[in-house]
Amino acid sequence: RSNHPKILLLDEPTANLDAATARKVEQMIDDYRREHDAAVLWVSHDHAQRERVATRHFCIKDGAVEKELL
Image (cartoon, rainbow, N blue to C red; front, side, top):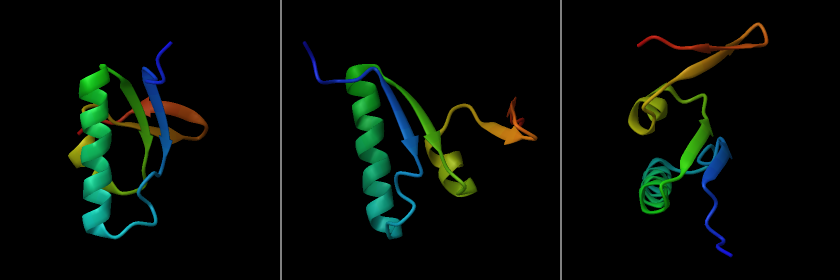
């Protein structure tokens, strides 16, 4: 059995990091995603980070998940 999950559920994984360390973590997560063909659900309040790391964006509004049009 492998200890390489196919889905990563991340709730603000870089919220308390300085910018340089946050970028390193973003790269580590992206490397993992690519190496293991994993899906990533990443919660972030940082709009710039969402632009850097996401291919699709969703928002929760009034308790419903909505696709965010960019």
